Length: 394
Ligand SMILES: Cc1cc2nc3c(=O)[nH]c(=O)nc-3n(C[C@H](O)[C@H](O)[C@H](O)COP(=O)(O)OP(=O)(O)OC[C@H]3O[C@@H](n4cnc5c(N)ncnc54)[C@H](O)[C@@H]3O)c2cc1C
Image (cartoon, rainbow, N blue to C red; front, side, top):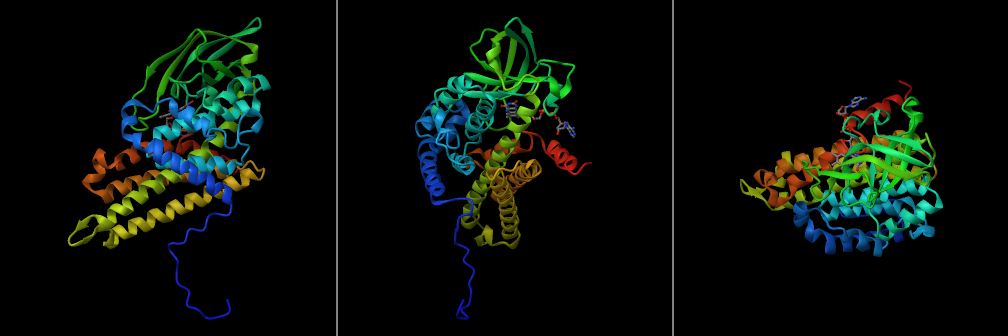
């Protein structure tokens, strides 16, 4: 700088992060327009009814379900950051259950099909899923095993050129509406981690029973199922990936799920922060806007710092992932930290709203209930801590 101009902080500047290009920003704008115009107005209604299947059809038509998926199967062939943009923009629907249902489709069930599936499986399930014509679910958790994936009991036994599957899965997102499920089973109960195999099971196969629609604390717009598998016969071609490699396939899947979950948690935290900031500027007490009390101002400062830290962790980790690394430790840290701060932020936003924060009509308590899942789903805080700790050889 040639002259000694006085530098003033420019708090209003919004320089985009270096991982994003003009194309990403255009994509962001078009997703935001769609989300705000076509999804967000239904958020209240879908809390009662769960979101309708046409959301998948519409998002498929718009190309939003295959942003980073191969063009060969109908995707847009974009980089990993495009799916990050989708996860961030879905927060503007103010409907956590909707964002989760879509993320299960795009970032949880679809990736293992594309990574480990045969061309036939990809044509049969990934292509229609990208087009929004098929809905997918992923079944890992069981009534007796969640964190302990190797402890699952669902059995797949070879019988001639078929497999017979028996067992149950619980808390399955999209479980009531799905056309197919990526199912984690045990093919060899004595082989530990090496005895797990994935199957791609059409949900209309005889013996697949959608037992119960589960009621939950938040994420009301999503459907969550208890599923039973009773003598479900599938051909050998339903095996997804390699026999006995299912644990490793699903561990890989969980990395993508966690990073996208972290991005969604940060965006959710930012969304509830923005709404609360607006409220704090308008709500008056003792003759001034409540945001002008130092104690409230500091709450915003703390929240903003945490959100920004989490966002930087997500972006840096995504950058490493996009550039060919497999940064499991950092993904785990980003998931842990983003989930925690999202819940802290939502909780503080309820406090700043006072009684209004506790009332349904303001939607802040909904953010808290929805965001709370982040500390449990896709691996609990405790499991994240264990993964991080073990990564240091402990
Ligand atoms: C709304 C919702 C949607 C979901 N969607 C899906 C889905 O689509 N597909 C799917 O497969 N699953 C889904 N899940 C399941 C979710 O991933 C599991 O709930 C989660 O992994 C935890 O498993 P668990 O509930 O069995 O808890 P548990 O494993 O029983 O854990 C109970 C407690 O023990 C702690 N704990 C367990 N093991 C350890 C350990 N080694 N060290 C320290 N603490 C430990 C946990 O951290 C937790 O606090 C969903 C869950 C919810 C609530």
